[in-house]
Image (cartoon, rainbow, N blue to C red; front, side, top):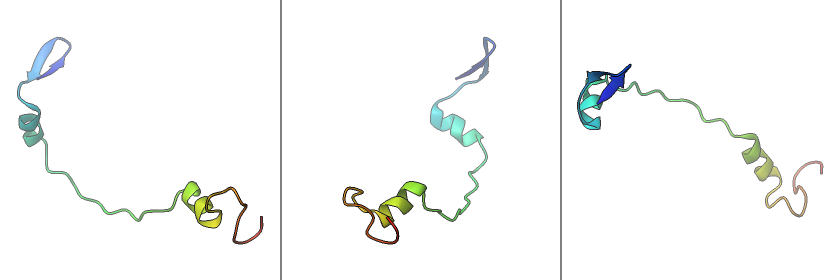
Length: 55
C-alpha cells in the first residue's frame, strides 16, 4: 500500500506494485578503479612501503 497525504494511492503487495512499474533499463558502465584499489595495487599490505615506483 502506498499512502500520500493520508490517502491510499495504490494498494498491493511489493511484487504487485513492482509489476506496475515499467521494465528496468539495463545499462553497462565501464568500471573504473577506485583510488583505494589503485593504492593497494601499488602498495599491497601498505605496511612495508610501496613496492613499485617512488615511495
